[in-house]
Image (cartoon, rainbow, N blue to C red; front, side, top):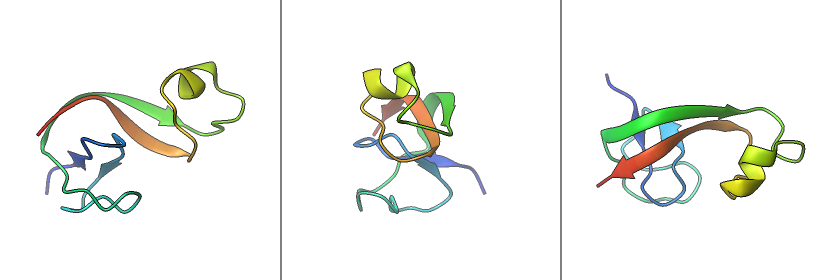
Length: 61
């Protein structure tokens, strides 16, 4: 089973529906960032990521 990413919040998951925002996920995504501590990460702040996890950099629906 391939990983998928949410086009709205960019969360990477195996599910067809995003567990964070409930949007249908896409299998067409590139780039990966792992955020462990969003409060201390400048990149997480730049990308508006507030929850630790794995995120795609670009997602197409």
